[in-house]
Amino acid sequence: MAEPKGHNNLFIIYIIAFVAALAGLLFGYDTGVISGAILYIKDQFSLSAVLVEKVVSAVLLGAVIGAAFSGAMADRLGRRRSIVLTAVLFSAGAIGAALSPSIPLLIAFRFLIGLAIGVASYVAPLYISEISPPDVRGALVSLNQLMITCGIVVSYLVDYALTLGKDEWRWMFAFGAVPAAILLIGMIFLPESPRWLVSRGFIDRAKDVLRRTHTEGSVEKEIEGISRTAAEKECSWDQVFKPWVRPALVVGIALAFFQQATGINTIIYYAPTIFEFAGFGSHKVAILATVGVGTVNVLMTLVAIWLLDKLGRKPLLYIGMTGMCLSLAVLGFAFNTATLSGMLKWIAVGSVLFYIASFAISLGPIFWLIIAEIYPLKVRGRAMSLATVANWGFNMLVAATFLTLTDKLGKAGTFWLFAAVCLAGIVYCYLCVPETKGLTLEQIEEHLHKGGNLRKLGSK
Image 1 (spheres, one colour):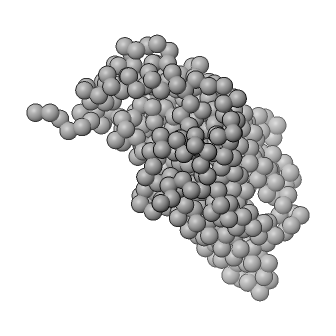
Image 2 (cartoon, helix red, strand yellow):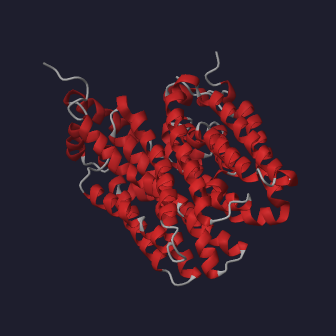
Image 3 (cartoon, one colour):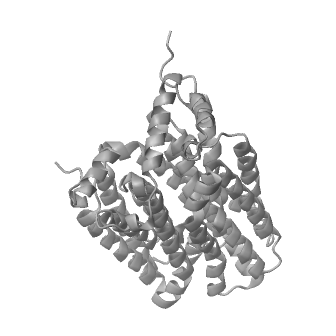
């Protein structure tokens, strides 16, 4: 009797995807852990707002550089070895940051962690997508995004558990070496991407990998498809900027801007600081409130994964970005109204929770999904890499200026500015962002080739 499609290999596939997605967990952990640690670092080293921004944004500078080189690294070393290298960098950065005796050294090791995050943000989902069979690929690639949100929650819980003394921030960083070590050991035993093996001429090795992750009857067909698309994928940067590709390139970079400039990482990195602004009296209580933010992020990401192929991309963008805009406006109003001082902390918590829920069903996952869908196959790798670099660049800019903005514009003015950007983003999505629900990648590429308006893509 023939076995159901892929059932003989599903366990192996899930194990491979889970181990690789630990890179996403580390991504989330090392971006989130600073939110609690910075409260104690600021106290211990008497940091100014500018130095706080430098400690926070050092990771993001590293991520920009890491993302810029991630495509070339993945092609030269292979996907598996690139993830192994990120695990080494994560471990070294976590231990180095924990042991840092000075702020310059702490910034340097946070930069090293950023390099790992930049590479992991590109290579981990790429590896998972290339090693997964088509019928479970979407769910397994989404696992990486889910693990990022889980990593953020874990970082908040660790921050809360370690709010015992002024040096506990060192253990907050050091804990990141544990999943990094698991990722390193696990990846050593995992196979290389069959697509990369074919691109290097290792056809027999690629077939061996596919026999472990695909049904036997599909191996030869898969090899033929990989060989054909691998040959087509070779391109130069000139092709990325061709007029027919440019509209998709602009949409990817614009969505990267709106994802970051609407303030998401001020919440991820500075949530306890915001809650202390709002009146929570201790670091411990402010960090506990932040745990709720991370939990909502995970739960609503699960909701987004469920809804994306039911409602479509643009309806979720409209719903989520409207919620983000309203919650930011309310948060600004609360900080601007002296008579609400007693209620401010609860309004702040409610607004931040509603904001993060709205983000998690819209710009959070949809940016990454759209850039994986709208670029033509031949330029997809380079175009995605460019959008990823833009995303990290905007992330760094926002994180590096948040406290300065609150000094210059006031807390209310800063949140109103983010709300205004969010409103502009809704208009942009209506005018320019395509609806890709139910379309094949080939249909999207054909529409671009014909010079079609991206906004009309998928319209009846």
